[in-house]
Amino acid sequence: MGRGEMMKRALVIGGSGMLANVSVWLSDHDYEVYVVGRTKWKMSQLLERPNKITPIYVDYQDEKLFRQKINQTFDWDLVVAWIHNVPGEPMCVLVNELSKQDEPFNLYHVLGSSTNLHAIREKLSTPKNCTYHQVQLGFKIEDNHSRWLTHKEISNGVIEAIQSGQNIHIIGQLEPWDQRP
Image 1: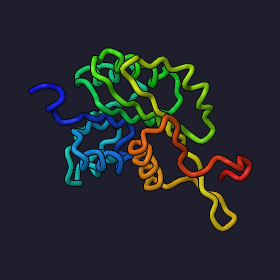
Image 2: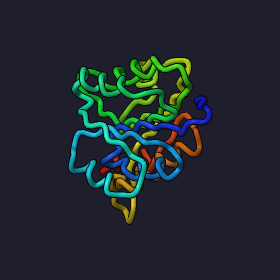
Image 3: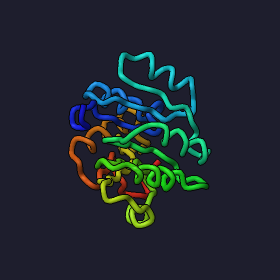
């Protein structure tokens, strides 16, 4: 069976927590979904739902094990990555591993509200076969009070980003900055 006839594969990092609904949505939309997570309890809640999800238990801050777990898999059609800015640059490790695949893929990088998208994009050297997208999380203002986004709002926003294919997608709002929670 040729690559075009195979089921599409998605890798979701952070897909057992705030992106759990993204993992399920991808599974419902004919993706074979692999979810990187470090918490077995969160993953078990995700796996209780009827879906086509395979867990990959690893903490992305463990660079050696993270690299090994990503390498033991295969080419991805879609990657959604919620990776905090931590020592060791796990996002760079991920992109480096993804650059080894031959097939084209989309990478959706989920980022916090205070992230400088331009600086992140310049720092991250993506391979030619990668279409890179940034999804920035904002906040909501309701009844003169601000709050952070819920997991459902975040997942729905990431799904909208995937459906639209925009290079930059903002969930919620970023302004006025002095009113953030």
